[in-house]
Length: 375
Image (cartoon, rainbow, N blue to C red; front, side):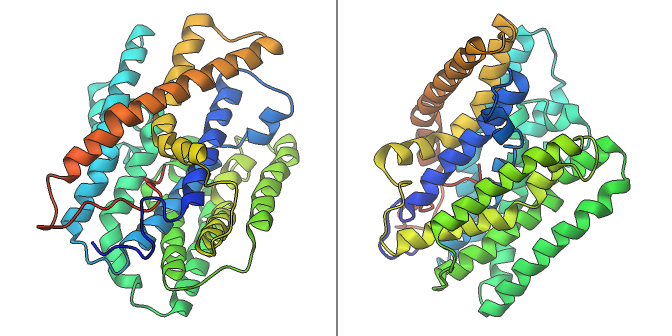
């Protein structure tokens, strides 16, 4: 694979830092909904599941940036992605099933098998797409993205900038059409189709791919990073009064909107951060500790909900106020420490070992510049 100019694992370090903040958004979302409410903070992160949308867009950006023009065979690309996500998926799924067993809740073998085969999000039954490890449903979507990426790259890479612009507009408009178009489905089926189904989430990945291709070919967004950050923050604050007016059970609720309408805002944020890195400007996202936490974010994403579940089962939900804050703090510290351990003991060494098993003769293993999986 050709080296990226100015290469290095973190050629775009701010994107690695953003991974941590997106993962934190998801973790706080689960703490708010599964542990207890913290006034002010919980309202802000009540729809933090949108962090998954961020990762889907980011995955497209980074894969396009990394593999455009690299000439990597599809089989090598797919093996590298398998090496990146599957070992930790297997370990976290085993841990999750063990915790379910302690809670005296059996997980069907077919749900575990579907999780390990990365096909669980294709099933509309909740026991299937959340059974093995509830947080791992997004990896089934990522697996679909990886399978289609070589063909998608071949289709888009040689096009002119206006084709990328029209593609970005088309997938954004398609999301706006699909959201109400699926409103007539039964609630459970609709939620699966909007939240989990790889085919619908694919729109967000394609948006990331065309943004990554444009960045790689020299396009630079005009929106500065502070403005893009403000737009994302403002969007999540806007969801608070929306939540007061519309229940999450309705199709036009902020729950669905937070995931379907946020993709262009996240694309703007990612591109603005990438531009700052490419221009050599400091963003506050590329410091050593932020980079480290960004590298741990995939493990944190897969592990944190298991820690929340185990803690609530053992101690019960805390009383409102200081006890809830202490519970939150304990879960954050423990889950992040376990994520760091999982990264250094499982994820990173397993990936290196597996990547060394396949590749072109004499080609050194190359990681994406921000270590992104899409998580």
